[in-house]
Length: 118
Image 1 (cartoon, rainbow, N blue to C red):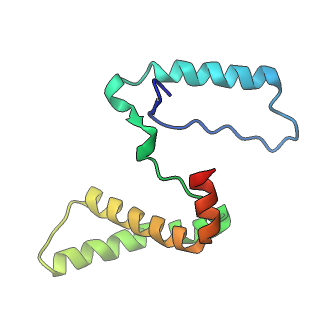
Image 2 (spheres, rainbow, N blue to C red):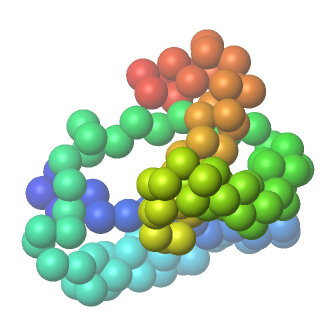
């Protein structure tokens, strides 16, 4: 975060209880500050542009992403059949956006609102 703007997120996890001591948390904070130096000022966007929501458990997400390549191939074939040949990278983005929408539909609306408001 820089001047109320954000360029990304740092996620640190552990399967050990009480792993993140105060010392480790301070180290992570310093690391995040250091990572900010890797970005240029233009890379940071206003926090108001973010629309955060809670996604379903990873096991549920995995069932959707397991079929990612198959869905990309099908979408690409459709674009060829309709004469609107698209670059593979564009098709991949389209499929990711569709999966995102489908996963968000699985999250109850009150949970999504709590995340946005809270």
